Image (tube, rainbow, N blue to C red; front, side):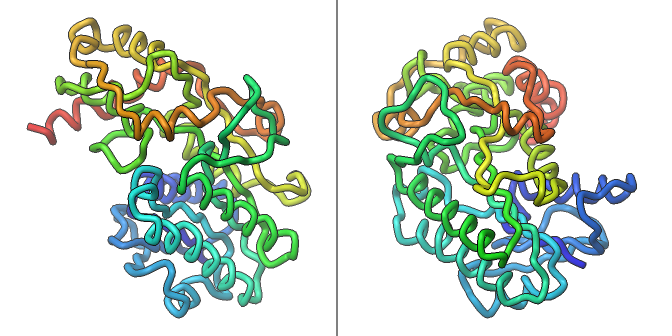
Length: 326
C-alpha cells in the first residue's frame, strides 16, 4: 500500500517522507504502508528503496490516476505555487493550486479505497477585518490569489470528505521559519531570510514594518504535525475538517531580537529595513495569532519560542549551509 506525497522533492515533502520512513522503521507508522511515491516536477531527494519518484504534471488527469489508485492509503498534497508566484502568474497558480487538487480528489474518488487526504492550506485564506486572535470559526476572506485558491482547495477537500470520497485532514500551516536553503517565491520568504542569511554572514532586508505580527512554526514542528494529522482517526476529527495548526505569535522586531540573541549584534547589523509594498499588501493581510486549543487537544504540538527555532537552524543547518555557500 502506498502513500503519495505531492511536492515530494521539495523542502516539506522531503522531510515528510523522511519522517514517515523513520516512523515505519521505529514500528509506529501513522498508517500501514509499503511504499512512498514522491509526485513532483523533480525526483525525490530521499534515497531509500521504499521511495519511488513520479516526475510530471499534477494537473494531468491520466498521470494523476496512474499514481493515485486502489493501492493508495494516503495522500499528502503539499505541492503548490506559493504566494508571490501566485500573485505574478494567476493561470499557473490556478492550474497547480486548484485544478491539480481537483484531479487528485477525483482520482481518489475513483479508487476502491478511501484514502486519508492531508491538504496543506495557509493562513493566507484570511484577510479583511480580523479579531486579535483568530478562532476556528472565523470565515475566510483572502486578500491574495494564493489565499483565494487555498480557500477554494479547503472547500473542495472538505466536500469530497463529507461525501465519503476521501478522509480529509486540512492543515492550515503557519509560516515556516527558519527554512534552510535559499529564498523562494513566497511573500513570507523574508521570515526565514532575515534569520538565515545573517547567520550565514550574508545581508538581508526586512520588507514589512517591524510591528508586523506573524504566526510561525519551525520546520521540525511543522513536519511532525503533518505526520500526526495522518495518524488521527476520523472519529476524533471535527465534521469541518479544517484545522489551524499551532504556531508562535511573534513580531518582526521580536524576530530580530531572537536573531541577536542567537547570532550576536554582528548578525543583526546585516539586516536593513527596505519596505516593499507588494509584500506588505500580502503579508500584512494575514492574522498573527490563533486560538489553537482545539488542535492542541488533538495532540498537535507547538514550538516553545521563536528563539528555539532560530537555535534549531543555527545548530542543525547553518554550518552545513555556510559550507555550501562557500
